Image (tube, rainbow, N blue to C red; front, side, top):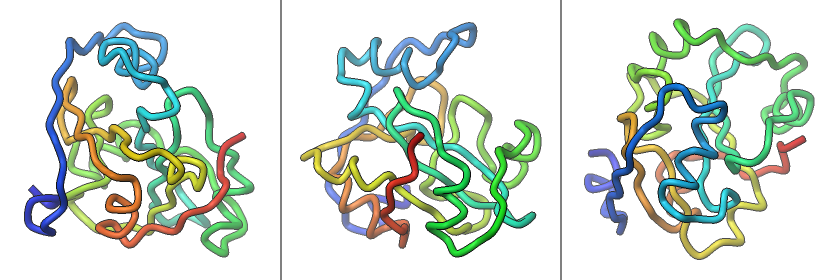
Length: 149
């Protein structure tokens, strides 16, 4: 796993994934009995036609204009699920920013860095890793910016 290789301290947490949940991120937070602000979701988007990754609290949406500005682009839009799976190498509901098939520019919501620990998808449906958000930012080479709506 990319985190172990980077020497980052993390713990692995599993939960009963519900494919019919209205919000996969909120369902994960509930199943883990955690504040949704500490359970981050990984979203794949396109910035000026190129893939990017956005990591935001599960109880928020990405503000596309803010995402574009954070990476110095003009236009951002959500990626279609099939394309997100192809680019990331993970299935929707299990997309992790770590160890993606190809490295893409990543932005993490700046407010998430205020927490001591956060949960981020570990690459499978029903699997989360708990770690310091600053470690996640550093391993990913992510930009921290206010990107939530």
